[in-house]
Amino acid sequence: MGDGSDIEGLVARKLQQLHTDRGRTLTHLAELTGISVAHLSRFERGERQPSIGSLLQLARTYGISIGKLAADQPDEDYDLVRAGHGVAHENSEGRYEVRATLAVVGLEPPPGTKTGAAHHTGEEWRHLRRGAVVLLPGDEEIALKAGDSIQLDSGRTHRPHNTSTRAARVLASTTSAVHHPVSGPDHP
Image 1 (cartoon, rainbow, N blue to C red):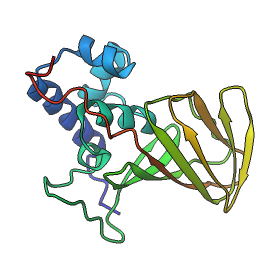
Image 2 (image 1 turned 60 degrees about the horizontal axis):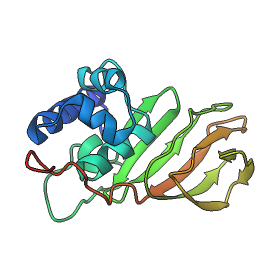
Image 3 (image 1 turned 180 degrees about the vertical axis):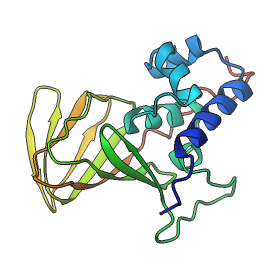
Image 4 (image 1 turned 30 degrees about the vertical axis):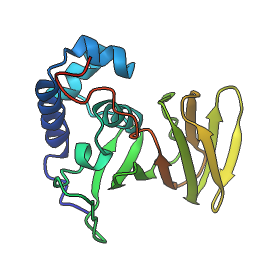
């Protein structure tokens, strides 16, 4: 894992840079992402750390990998994350580690954690490595235990709830970074 120094500041600086470089207003970005202008402004000032769902939506909207947004990966034709060098983030929903451009994320929600409702364009796959999690896609309740995997339309509102007595370990992958609606200042 990375040294964790100023991760929140890194994400805030990246978001400010993308916002400025792409020549878009926060109002326009809010329309594209479904994230309020107030939240976007707090993210850019480093006053609030985006949830993993918000990071995925922002990466998709800007047409970059979540690794380039949250892990300060270089602009190469590939993204290489060596063992022990993923960038870890923590917020109210638990710990998560950015591992790849395909939006592969390791999640470690603490016991009893109920995350907020998320929805974003694309497909999502989750594999529970440790613990017990209830996934709530829409009005359904699906109990997952270690070794279980699920794929779902991530545009459908979904919320995980860690029902374990310890931190769960989840590997999640999403295709949400595939579409690029804000590619640059000349984009309509």
